[in-house]
Structures are given as structure tokens and as C-alpha cells.
Length: 490
Ligand SMILES: Cc1cc2nc3c(=O)[nH]c(=O)nc-3n(C[C@H](O)[C@H](O)[C@H](O)COP(=O)(O)OP(=O)(O)OC[C@H]3O[C@@H](n4cnc5c(N)ncnc54)[C@H](O)[C@@H]3O)c2cc1C
Image 1 (tube, rainbow, N blue to C red):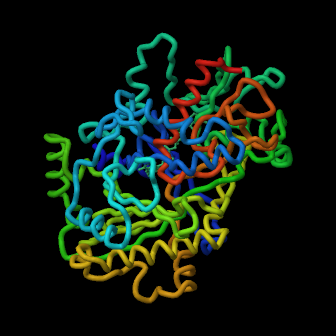
Image 2: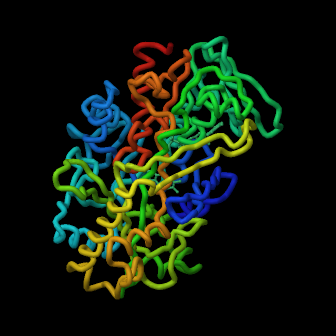
Image 3: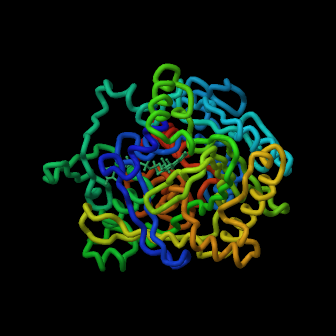
């Protein structure tokens, strides 16, 4: 059940790695709670299910900065191949793929009102948020669901493949490092609940898909990373790769909360309603329990000279506060708009805290280290104020209470943001590909400096996509597998 799976997995160590960042000096020293899926399908099995592709401009940019084969025309076939889109096949969309992509099945009246007000504020309403033309559009969200049920990557790809003789899934196994025969990846060491270390031999290649934290950690534990850091940690250097763990990006995000005069998710958070909502979902696959966190998604640019999206806006018919332990719904009727920075300038990093694979990696988000990202959020907040002042959403509003009437000037906004902004749970870029010898990966996703080792997950992004990450990570898997089938792993 989508609603339930978003609530119960969060913070539960059976499903969530539950990372904490280091204090972030760019945001008043705050620390962030960072959930990551510790289940089959990884974070796609616990996420908020928005299914959003990166923009054409994102991928064309990747190609321009030295990653041939990653321009939009080259990646589009893999997006299409991966999906089974409820809206039907078209030159831009695919059907028959393993990943169901559906329209949301619960639309709150205020979501419709919000879209109409965005149109009044100058945005273009579209029926497909994943259409190629990306900037200035607003639409209902699309989700990784079928018939109202969550479809994470494991359910979409793995469940149907479990009977294949060439697939073995080891549950409760944590990889501790890649082993090498000279410079060639020869296998993987791992431990299970009994804590004994075991070893798997690789006949052809090893592919890491541990996510932006897990893959960077595994590379460093395996001796691939910045020489000084590995030496400090007592790890034998296999290849001095200075950028492993660097280039960490996320979409800095901040919320706008309005009290409203009609019931929202906030009014449905009682035992009786939760039971009824659960029953409705069980019988029909519809209703609030099928809803993703965000019902409406849009993209906009804060600079009319640039033809790229700089901001995602989201709308959810429930007001909440993003505390250290995740979103907490307010007690009164409220709605929330969110602004998320696309193409951020700020960069963070991850480093080992220990050579022990059981210890979590140290995360330094530096989320607002570049003032331009904070300025983009300010621009986004002002846009949301414009939207909420337009009919029809305006007639439901009982007043803004975040950021609130005391936050108006640039300086007031920026100081407010340093106190409240957080990431979107979208860490990316820590094993980025590129054409420079110092890039961690080459554009075929091979780890530079060694043989037979690949990375394929959100860590490969040289610049984070202007979208939620999951649809894009699935495309990476399709692309790498097609290339390995064609050329063979080296
Ligand atoms: C609460 C939340 C909501 C989100 N909402 C959305 C959304 O609505 N839409 C969207 O597109 N994105 C969303 N995201 C982000 C998105 O789901 C992730 O960015 C994306 O799934 C990352 O994919 P990945 O393959 O890079 O890594 P992951 O999906 O994190 O996969 C990494 C896998 O590797 C495993 N692993 C790591 N280290 C090891 C090891 N040493 N040994 C063995 N296994 C290991 C992990 O357990 C995990 O299974 C959300 C994230 C969160 C946390």
C-alpha cells in the first residue's frame, strides 16, 4: 500500500539504512536524517514513487561535458524500454516494459486548484509531466505503481526473474569490498547475519549498484579513492582516484505551507479515517492510500535567458513540517508547496569514517555552499506566493504560515532557508563519469584505473538530473545491461 509503505519503512532499520549527515556549516550546523532503502529494490522500494525523467537539457549537457552516448536521443530508447506507461506508447513514451508508470489515482480538489493557479501564474498545463519539453510545465504526478500498488525496481524487474538459473539473490548480505587480481576485479567479499566473511568470484565483471553512499563507500573500502584518505584509513591503494566521494549533489528544498478552509490529508490522520482509507485501497486500489506524497509537479527556470529548468515545484494536499525524523503532518487543514533546486551549484562529499564496512560513511552535504542555490529557492518561494495568491487556490487559503509574513527581503529569506532547507533525499554524483582521467568512471560506467568493475546507480551522475532520481537510475540499468550484452564486460 503506497501510503503505508511510505510511513512504516521510514526510520525502521529493517528497511532503512538511516544515515545521518555531518553538521552542515552552510545551514547553521544542522544535521540531516537521510533514509536509504535497505531492501530489495533499494530506495525505490521505500520512496515516494514520483516517476520523473531528467530533462533533455540534462542529458545533452552530460554529453557536451564529455560523456558521449548520454545525450537525450541516446538515452530515450532506454527510458522507453524500461516503462509500461499507462498513457500509451508514443515517440516519447514506452509500453510493455517491466516498470509500470501510472497516473495518480487520487486527485484532491486543491491539487486541481493549484494547477489552475499555476497556469494563471504563467505555467503551461500538460497531460504528461515526462514529455520532452520540460521547462515551464505543470501537471499531475506520475507514479511507479500498477492498479494503485507500489512497484519498486525489485517488484518490476526482479520478481519475474527469480526462477532464472543464472540469477542468485543473497538476502541479508552486505558487500564489504571488491577483491582484485592485480588491477582486475576478481570478486566481492561480503558478510551475512552470522558476520562471517564470504567471497564470490567474478568470472567476467563486478557491477556496484549500492547508491550514492554505498557505491562510493565500497570503492574506497576496495582501495579505489583519494590516496591520502585511503592511507589515513589504513586501506591499501589499488588506484588513486581523487574524485571518489566528491561531487555529492542533492536538490536543496524548502516548503511553503498554507492553512486552508477545506479538509486535507491533515484531517484524515485519525485511527477511523486511516482504517477507512486502508479499506478503500484494499477494495479498489484507490483513495488517499494510493497517493504519492506529491500530487502535482512542475518545472520552471529562474532565468529567462537559460532554456533549462532550475526549479521543481511540488504540491501536496497536506501541510507538514520536515523535522529531523521526516515529514510530520500538521494537526489543522493545510497544504504544502515545495521548491527544489535543479542543477545545483553546491557540492558536498562523502568520506569513510572507518575501514570497517559496518560503520556508516561520513556525509558532508554542504547543501547551500553556493549562494546561487539559496537565491533560486528564494525565487521559488516568491513564485509559490504568486501562485497561492491566484484564484482558484486563493479562495481556499486561510493564510501562509511558512515561511510566514515576516520573511520578505532576500536576506530574510536566505537566513530563513539556512534554518529550514534540506535535501530531497536525492544524493547523487559521488562516482561521477567523465572524460577526464581523474573522473571516477568513464562514460561506459567502467571504473577508471582498474578492469572489470562498473558502477550503475545515482552516483554516476556528473550533474544531478532535474528530476526525482528513480526513473533515471532504472534507465541507467537498462543502458548498461544493453551495452554489456552487446560488447561484453571488460
Ligand atoms: C523517502 C524518500 C522518498 C523519495 N521519493 C522519490 C520519488 O518519489 N521519486 C524518485 O524518483 N525518487 C525518490 N527518492 C529517491 C530515489 O528513490 C533514489 O534516489 C533512487 O532510488 C536511488 O537509486 P540507486 O540505485 O542509486 O540507489 P538505491 O536505490 O539506494 O539502491 C542501493 C542498493 O544497494 C544496497 N547496498 C548499499 N550498500 C550495500 C552493500 N555494501 N552491500 C549490499 N548492498 C548494499 C542498498 O541496500 C540498496 O538496496 C526518494 C528517496 C527517499 C529516501
